[in-house]
Image (cartoon, rainbow, N blue to C red; front, side, top):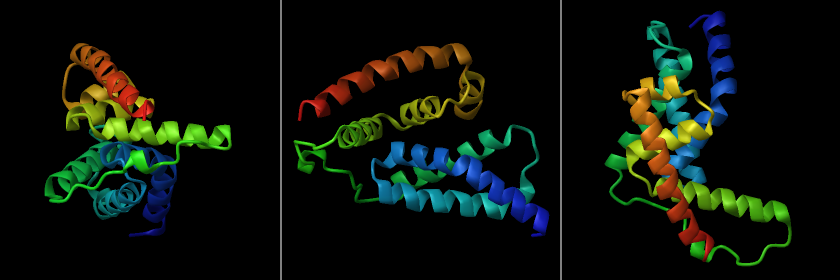
Length: 165
């Protein structure tokens, strides 16, 4: 790859790396696994950057690679690992620790959703537009809005279960 392609890849990693990591975290519920998946996603982006045709936005292309990588990892993993939030300390000394726990609980709750629902809510949390989410998930925008409403209801129930622990 030439200098221009290397810079393009660096720019993509800088812009989309944190979003892809959060997407992976939503799938796995585990920070270390999410980091591994992030690296795997961007290896694929690097290897296939020259094949990107521009039929969609580059963000849509990268999210699709991330989703496929996460789904493949989940399906191929015999021993699904998860974060055990019951072992987390019950008392916290600062508000930032409490916020961190809430984020962990949210990611754990997201990881319990169906695969397609995880994708949708994670993209929504990343502030991806409805038309882009519809394109990535290959469903209509009207159906997407209904699914988002239902996913939020499910997520509230799952989150409340962990919040009581």
